[in-house]
Length: 515
Image (cartoon, rainbow, N blue to C red; front, side, top):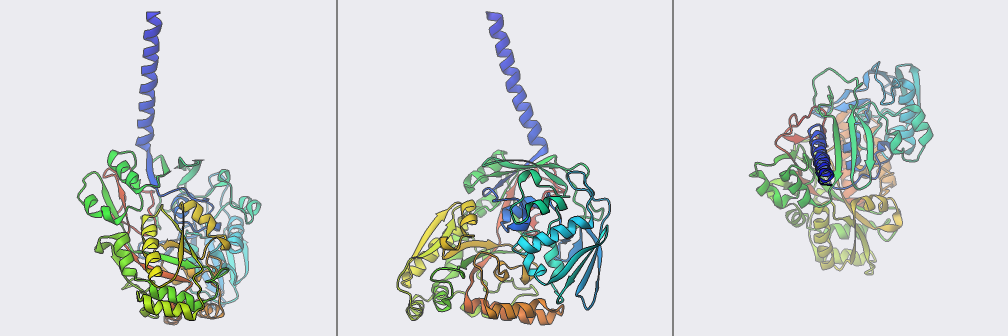
């Protein structure tokens, strides 16, 4: 009996040791990323959620990728030539690239992916709506013919958020407009999909047969070498838990840390801060499809007039070095910077707003403001705006949900009048979600359509800049969305993480990173 008890103890000790060893083995080769929540889907064609783009870019690749100067460089493409006054784009493909299922990538896959992206993707329609045809003109060559030149075509091809990632042809053909199921998450990237455990994690593992570029890594362009065995994305909605998890060594990387912790964390040797390389900016979208804000532009301007964005930034972000009350949709120094219309950016005048709301026929009906708590800055900004609008006699009803629920509800026009989100840094205005007719908010007016055609219908940079300034003025006039301000957000990492830069270009990536 005593011998049996000792054997049980030895067995238990061995089992416990095995768990520790197994855990340590997992931790050594697995990079653990604490996210603000779960993605709605990782099918990049049909969604624009930041978290889906962050994860998806490790598995799925585009024909082009941005370098550190936001210049699109060939990735799955090897080059291109333009004909017929830039209306015909002939793209050659790299040869020998394989999908995670072992099948070689060919023009057939590119054509099927571009067609699905153009038909069902929110961003795809921006380019493919003017496509006359897209065809395989060789096993490794694709020809895209447009009805008009589009000066932003390569930027749209390079942007992975809601972008034209390349899937196998049979998978996109079977999926049509439905989200691709996890078991069919097959791309050409340096990591492949392993499993998704709801509310626990999404795990990607190294793709051993990856054939990438040999040129030096530069931004998202160049070589993509998987140094770790796996990357595990773990939903951790509470920001305090994300921070303490890094400090305790439970996570290697954590995103969207609140500004009020910045000063403390700067001096904490157990964490390393990674600032965004360019500001993100908060947005409050208005519903142009349904409800009392649908086409009442005067009421929208009344709401805009009531808001003091600087106060919202100070409350939600804190440290002044982390934000800038800038009304231009692009930061100073950027070629797209414009002050056109920005005089209306942050008036903060409740009396003026009250009169405008009365002229607009507003009767006090509650305005539903959809916001999540996963992004603390979103919730803080919504709280400040609700109070400021109350001072102007505008009745706002906050609808507070988690981020995954918000992503579902914002696609349902009867569920909201305004919703709070943010926008990452982009290299070209055409990638602004507000310019996308299909993005929730569904802003489509004759004035917008005409100006957008001027903006995309030429490759002349000066002409495009002039058209963009008019578009920004129109945004301030029709108010499909309101910019909150520039925020230099930051993430934190374990000091032991190697190969990761001091700042992120847009989304953090983990090829070329070891621990």
